[in-house]
Length: 111
Image (tube, rainbow, N blue to C red; front, side, top):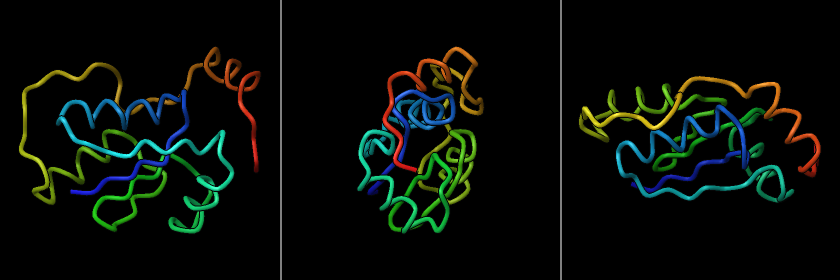
């Protein structure tokens, strides 16, 4: 399975996607859309919209998706088997006010 995840370096939704990838021990390409203009443009072109996270699994683009929704997609399409392995954090949560403030001072925005 080839997985490309268009994620922010620090974001509740993006971290939820990473959490699901770790839960199922899935190899994936973690693509930074905040600090690389070309990555962001590629995500928008492929997904047809500007919101993140976006996850491409074997050519299928899941746009503006949470970790929980990625997990549901993987399970419902028999791409992974159910597991009792605990998750390391929230899979369906936005950023806290503190996280937003931190990103505003450290990230370069291209949009």
